[in-house]
Length: 164
Image (cartoon, rainbow, N blue to C red):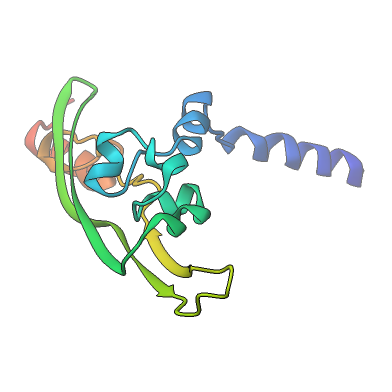
């Protein structure tokens, strides 16, 4: 009997399960091209060359190309506009945010000894915003509420009473 109850419970509980679609897996696995303006303008090609703060994330050995100390940061504006239609009611969501896209620094230490094979070494630290998934859609119904809410049903029955 316990087996049948357990099977019935599992069968009924799976009705409410929701899974991600293949589009979600693709969206969460891709990265945006972020970094300094120079790095973005060259579509990330400085990763192999070095000499750019954003290239440190792609190729840490690229910090050797720097001949002087350098610090920098990059801001980015993320503007999103979503349109949705829910049971015939259209709504629009807009959002704009100013984010810290990249910040970092390279400190170059030159060796003054002429007999050493080491001419210089560098220490670098860098922060880069990999992806911004802050993109929400809020379907709205009349009265500014979700269609399935009790308050919306109450408002609907108050405005449009049904007489027997």
